[in-house]
Image (cartoon, rainbow over all chains, first blue to last red):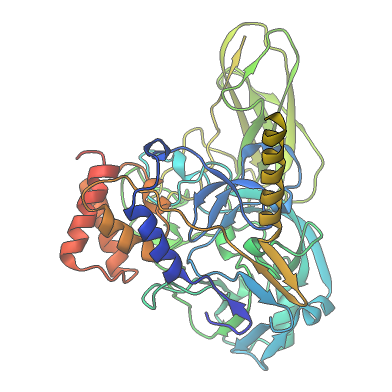
Length: 396
Length: 110
């Protein structure tokens, strides 16, 4: 929505210039295809450019060797092109209105007066790993790099809502940012949570990301954090919270960001679900980071298999590892526990004694017993990806 | 000669660092970033001009080029979704030209 104190890219000018560039055909043919392009965006390190506008940047997997992902390496995902590229903190306000006793208009300093809460939580795009779906599905073709593990600090949403005084009969809580669509017909990016969810203890409006203000492309100066749930709800550059006494049915809640209403959130590949519900809690998953996929390790030398595992807010109870394509499994050692919303590092010592191709596998289980399927479950939007990965390496 | 090359390399690094530093500016209480200029990267072919004109109103060209190869029916459905769901201002005959271009250049051949 429109908001004072923000400027946006002049998309028409950009689009016009881009059209000219395309028309004169200034792009070498060898750039066509699936090649990855790295680029450095403001306040970000070199990341994989998925799309330029709306900007979407993916994190190279090597950053997941670390327990905490540095701000400059965290992925970027926008839905509509005219994003906040300039914020004046004198004018930025978090406004709360709707079915409340009173309206609020909070400056960043006001936000900092609420009790500060801090924890580490995985942020993951609903469509992370979509490019691995089979049959393939249209949409952002992410590899595994639309996720990160960061320490967030901010004010409880519940405390903010209580200050405004949520009236009885409230149903949904709606979150908006200054992003605006390119055409009036394109739906504005607005998200909602059921009011009971919004009042949960751990949801915060974060003004700190790993101890500093978030980069502009990750939601400066403050964003919503819904730990355990997919990042579609973590509205960036949050400016408006509206409490409704009826269900919110904006485009980005319905029909977008829905999963099949089945226990697995999946349907037989290539079929349409009978009914859908909004995507919500993250599935349990794990990923081997070292040795890197398709890399080569030396025979008779010890090598440490390392990776990360997380679940939608229930911690990781154990990770088992196989070095023989799933025939035998042994317990991996878990690293430092930063809480139920964080990812945990695992490691497993290995000393291969025969040359050849190996399929390494890791399987995580959370504290509720939820684990990972051996094959990718399918849904038409390419969400919830979490199978046990087949991580091939060569011993030579 | 070597010195000239070295100068060029150093100068390029300085220019690159300067350009990067300029992409984030904080003046008083205002922080501003500048996104890099956009490049369009579409395969040349019949209908590319229409795709470059209309699709690019709302999104950059990777929204096309990153997709898995689609059937003609999938690309037609995708163009129709842009028109019906997102209100892309594309006339019927142009929509067909664009869908044909996408199917021919980013399709399965079916």
